Image (cartoon, rainbow, N blue to C red; front, side):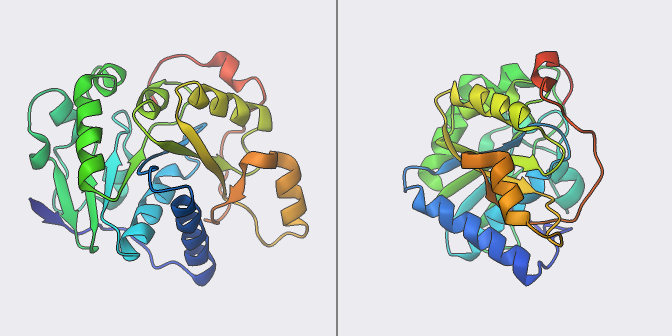
Length: 253
């Protein structure tokens, strides 16, 4: 097994560390049977990959053996942000029969944390993720690791996250504050629920914590399936209205 250094990891301030500790604790209270967790979002650039990385690190820091699986075969954020000294091969190589799984994952410089990168972009991501090879890999990882955190593409344009959800014990939906409408988020949630995967919660991300009345506005807007998972600073992005899912089509993520 190769060993790599995860580059690009930043030291979190106290507020963000506590947010991830809370997220980790809530995940643990969901039960020991929830070992394989999908992290997804409605649209690109909502911060799901960052949350997947730091959640996996928080769990590993707590003494659990964790695999961070990059299943975004279309546009991996993990390779771009955190790859160091390896990672050119990955999940797509295994799913296409080019390499055995033991040759595509890495031990990181963080104790207890392992990572599998997405690998080269294949022509048929959804088909590969829906194959028995992916299900078999997930089953093996479930037996080997305490937790498997899977970073998936957003559900705006492609069905990959729903395909992956059918192999997972639960999912966490990342929603960017003031960008994604409640209706759009609810539509994505319902699509994931139809796979039989358990909804473990929602992380409201990129929240402006400096404003007054944050808690009340937050709960009024997103209701029962939200809880705050941390703040990464406000960024500008495309707003997604209520009918965003009506225009959904299978295409690049």
